[in-house]
Image (cartoon, rainbow, N blue to C red):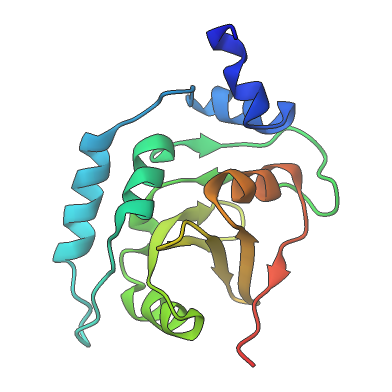
Length: 164
């Protein structure tokens, strides 16, 4: 297959277009920046002693998508699509919150970025599942970053997490 067409099988046209406009391309991999973020998160301790979890799924997501400002252009399928800044530093001061979410889910969670319009924090777990945390609750965005990006960029209503 022609290299310029490989991503069309990975992402839908609107998601692919938004990612490419943000500077993503197939094969993008900035492991140097991902390691800087990993070191910064590992070194941070909250005033109450909470620390961030850093694990391969998070580092891989940062390496491929970190630093991107993704701005959807379509109307959204069910809700308004979400503009994103994929930078884990948005969650730097949320070690306790992310730790609490991880414990509730039975996993570890690391920051991934933020929804720029709502200030919701995006997080990823050790299996690569992606979540959003905002003032209204915690949301499941997808089983992996590709599905989460599709949910956010195309305006699919995410599932609310319950801790019942």
